[in-house]
Length: 389
Ligand SMILES: Cc1cc2nc3c(=O)[nH]c(=O)nc-3n(C[C@H](O)[C@H](O)[C@H](O)COP(=O)(O)OP(=O)(O)OC[C@H]3O[C@@H](n4cnc5c(N)ncnc54)[C@H](O)[C@@H]3O)c2cc1C
Image 1: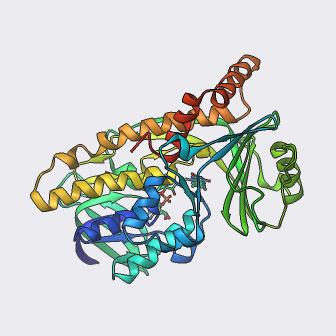
Image 2: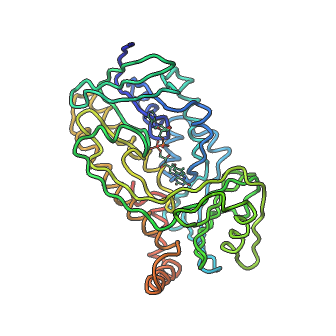
Image 3: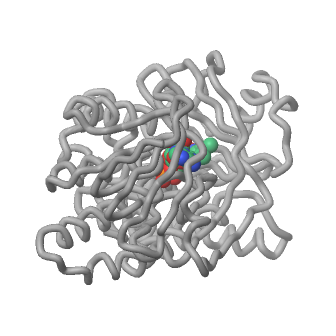
């Protein structure tokens, strides 16, 4: 058994854990990040790709924005399409100049890992049997195994950034959870073809929702609404492209096809665990909450949590004041529920669901977003993150 000490023990090297380690480093606070998987696996995981203005600014601020600025793209608008009719939401015009940056989550993670290792930060991959002990005390411990050895990491504070399937959340006693499943899932593909659009297209169609997103000048990311219990084997590449062609079709516009590099089906879920802290144990990102991907908020919300936590820890270490740390859960949950509301609204606006009455109400909402500048501004502010800063 090997024992070591650190100020902040971080479980999970996703966006939440890695950004937190950087912010703490900038405040002179030492941390150790423990990650279940190996580096190659974590860096290859294709997930989100839309960064709010605040997230992109933060990555710049902590010195990991160079590649995002050169390889990512800034989008000042987004397209909503209803039954073939395309309507542009002018994000920047409606939000006083704010925009989103399209840059893959796995690229963000690569940049964060490289920068963390470059400053000699402790980041350990391939740990297993992670357990949290003494979480009621002011000296919590993370126990874990690595390369066949048992370790104990004694910390001032432990932060669970280990995603929805991690172990940290289960160490918080009297946790209350709120959950909603949706009667559909997303089939997502990464395709080796130049995007057929400069800005994202969210399409509502009688056959279901489709999304044309982008990753780079050579890579497109596309999604289809499918049944929640759909098997990926039922979707050969040809069927996926056929369905995308139908749902994204718009007069005078062509969808280019290319080899499918990756495909998978992801459930859509809304989930919140409260509170996001217990004594010296804190939860951040997907460990505490999940939003349906329609609003493109998961990674942004994870980053927003750790910004609050890093500030509170900085105050605590510098002055001994605990008020910000004690308010961590309440501070984050205000944003989390606001984002839950937006993500659920976008999901219900864009997916095919419900009975004939629901469909008529949905059509009225869709028309309102296209016809009212106030409604479009609400959407734009939430989408770029201006409404939740
Ligand atoms: C399959 C999938 C597809 C997604 N697609 C989209 C999308 O298209 N658009 C969108 O906006 N959002 C998407 N999301 C959501 C977005 O990617 C997440 O919100 C974001 O990754 C949250 O970051 P995080 O750091 O909180 O958690 P994660 O990124 O999940 O990171 C958690 C880390 O903890 C590690 N870990 C887990 N358990 C342990 C343990 N016991 N010990 C140590 N380490 C552990 C994991 O390996 C992982 O590296 C997707 C999520 C998933 C799961």
